[in-house]
Image (tube, rainbow, N blue to C red; front, side, top):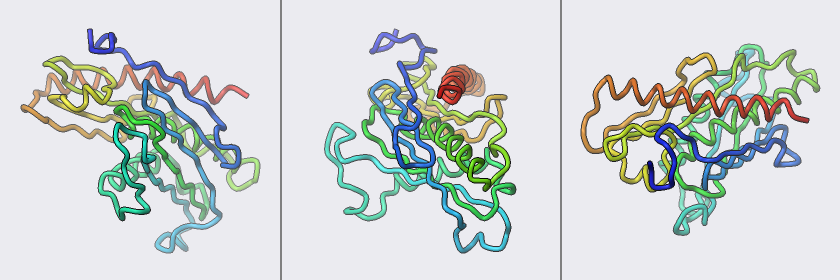
Length: 238
């Protein structure tokens, strides 16, 4: 048993809400425990200057935490200048989603994913990736209706989750209390077929073995499978 009563392989209660932002081409509000992240997808009929003339699209992300998303107020990124953590996370989200997308068939268009953390209790980056998939699919459905693209350009669902070692035990979906004391912390992004898009893992206290790594990846795969089932259900709803 964990501090919140979950089993070691149990996700926090979670929901996903499509279409939360009325005017965005795609949007998804994900709640996983006390972590709430809103992702909106915006379609622009252009690409960044470094992509011009290549005939393919681009997908990028921005990530920010609202001032009182955490236990103390933090300054807005616009007021304090570049934030290293925010930049690292938005690059992660963009990298994962680009890898999962057939950019060659998108034409010279850009999808921008804005990931705004409303409330943070651990796992904001993995929640952002999971919601980003739903928002991107809806944006692509809009693009199909606008005859910008012929088909959805992400061949299979994508989701992400955290795993780690807490009190010498491999656990799934760390909240803030677990993450802040974990011996090992890892974030895993994966496709439905079990292919890895990103694995970020750090031994905070002591090195971990290949056997332990295998156990953590197995936990991640199980949790991601559950999240993907929810994504599919949400995307099938009207």
